[in-house]
Amino acid sequence: MVRVSVDFLVISKHGAGGDYPGCTNLAYDKAIKDGADVIDCSVQMSREGKPFCSNSIDLEKSTMAAQTPLRNRSTIIPEISSHAGIYTFSLTWPEIYNLTPAISNPYRNPNERDSGRIMSLFEFLNLAKNSTTLSGILISVEASCSILVRHHSEKMKLAVFKIIKHQIRNAVYLREKKGLDLAKAVLDTLTEAGYSNGTTTKRVMIQSTNSSVLVDIKKQSKYETVYKVEKPIDDISDSAIEDIKKFADAVVIIKPSVLPLSDDSFVTGKTNVVERLQKSKLLIYVELLQNEFVSDATVEINSYITGAGINGTITEFPFTASKYKRNRCLGTKETLPYMAPVIPRGLLQMVNPLSPAPAPSTAPSPAPSQFSKMIMSLGHHYLQTLFSQMMVVTNYAANRLAVAIRRIYCTLSGYLTEKSAATPALCSIAAVDSQS
Image (cartoon, rainbow, N blue to C red):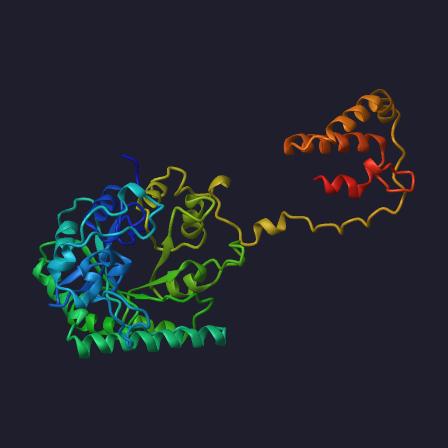
């Protein structure tokens, strides 16, 4: 068995969400088979309060619900969205369980785009508990949003606050109008599945973008809490870090918060966010890693692990990260040249500035060469004869051939290099172009 060379967590995103519809039994089975250390469940709730795994509160985005009679349940809830949706809390668990799941990108694995079935949180917990290879689980409770970091961009800050306001309305709607408490449902199901009585050694992490949710989780349990920052950040203040430490053991950030990208997707720099958070004893996980839209997925993983030193990757393709983790070339005292991380702006340093384009020449075109004169002399009579015969043919293909021959003749004669009074009518630019 190949030893693990680098100590970082391979965390799934909706299971192997790049290979199967996310949050289904097949996606989770493949994530475990592919070597994930941690599998995840984004918790949603049915009308009667049954917690289950789904990547969206709107079932139109994760299932084929819109192609069933349940499409009549589609509704607009202004407190949540201005767009109509088939929301999880509008359907019973049996109705949801019988839905056909849909892969997030049908071009990824067309043969399996509607395979698998939706899993309840209890089923998910039992699957993880019975696995002999998993080290833990990550449960996402996305009820609202609270951002504590400081952004340099006022425009970005304003956008974040708009999202905060919107998501807080979601949480208020679910709690006050539907009586659904996600955090309580998660803790109760963990207890029911035997995670709170010491019968399993699996690591339990509960993630949220809402600091108040994590505060409540810490008060009621000893599970690890993970704070997710959904917006890109390029710095973080000491006060923000101290606030985060009060309710979180780890932080999830997105890729541009570590290695910012240009509009052309080139790495333009490296932030100090990972370094500052880790200095305060917070673990850092980065999302979302995929196999598509990058020149080399393994090189990308390497840049975040060996280049930035993150503690874990969140990926829709656990196999790629797991295979990288077992690379024998990692863990050496000195980084091998071919295992070096991407250097920010490294490609730009190798590109020489472009010289200005030369000004167009005003010199007269050179006279036809001796060779072209010879060809012109030898073929002059033959081409003229061919002209006279083909110009009277009305067939389209023959006319096109005549034009091509005329171009050859006129080019060899040098007539097209500079129109002059001596240019024969057959070789005038206007005559040639009119037949093109």
